[in-house]
Image 1 (cartoon, protein in one colour):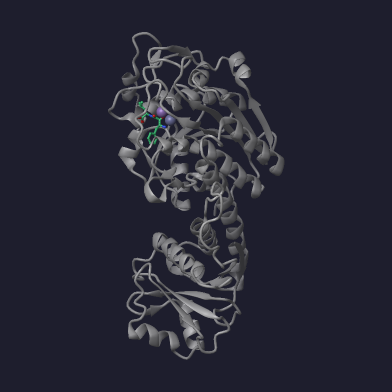
Image 2 (tube, helix red, strand yellow):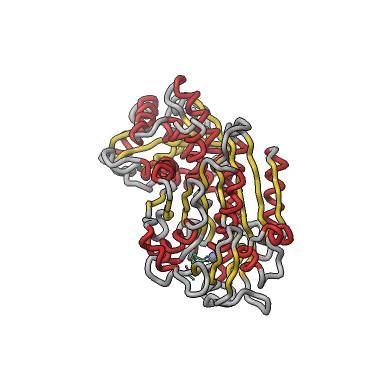
Length: 498
Ligand code: BES
Ligand code: MN
Ligand code: ZN
């Protein structure tokens, strides 16, 4: 879908369909009222008759609206004007795009972006309209032998800006919205690919492709490199797998040479069977999504590349399968991590922290300004926060707040969880420095506490995306989260967030 911006009132613009909003209690939005005046009360008559009551999620398609230059008009219910906000705005856009896709209109002008009632400015409104439109249009049919269903006719979407002065900000919103949408789309595609295609080698190839396209630097460490460095924890997870593990480093150098980079570290388990601590069979297929942290790092770097973000960002992706087998790590095995600390592996299914700890130690060499790791780390986080918020842990409060704020702006929210030392004793081991699990209580906290033992040398935050990276059930698929949060975080740091 192609997007553009215009500041013309609806009805005066030639288009396949003009989309305008109607609030509950028969109140037309400003754009709808303008169209109504042009059509000499045609819209208000329809609203008065009760054919469109403005309830959220409802739509009404009209043809041949008098004196309007557009072929169709789509009325979209916005709910009560007093309660209208970000969530309703995004839902209204989604309802509009879904209805448009069911019409024959090849292009449309969306005037919902002019709704000041959102209490966010035009840049935000445009960026989110683009993100939601792309979200609704997303399909993953690469693996079907032939495409399913008819392709939607909608090709071009013009977003309304109320006046000329808003055009510059709206254009910035369009640029950022598209970059985020493309990053999300890449993260979704990688997550949705089957685990026999999306292997560590495939992820490395994708990183190389991004490096070529956006002139980034890419380095891929192979098993022998990791052996030389002493990444005993990462290697212990890879032991059962026939696929070679990789440590991918992708560097976007958009800032000054002297500027310390932000490092993004993504868990890249391309399939998590649990290893010798084997997972139960039901829904095990969903463990192909265990590389969504890695996918979000690649997606965010794509967005950074596309926006030519003027700052330095390093993506670090430890990636392997977690498989059982004759050579696989056993419960009770003790390994030496890159940091020199020893770990007793009491459960081979707690593998994410084992690959992340070595990648986090490796991050030290970039002298990062901040490190954020992103991981589908614990089932316990899903129990704590469900599928709405990602779990946020941080050893630096300011960094934690920055990420929370970015999540709010991007509508890709996180919730701050505790990382107090009081929880550390749960990781006690009788035989090694500490164990890789802490038992059932506070499972997502003890996982974060494990990582905290490897991040003392820098400002660090951890996002547990186990509940937010994908959906189960009939809408099974990757969400692309937290690419919007991470991109907003980088934009804010680069001074382009406002
Ligand atoms: N990848 C899983 C976490 C996960 C499980 C995410 C289910 C989403 C849904 C992780 O590697 C894992 O298996 N964690 C274990 C840790 C436990 C053994 C301490 C878990 O959460 O059960
Ligand atoms: Mn696991
Ligand atoms: Zn896992």
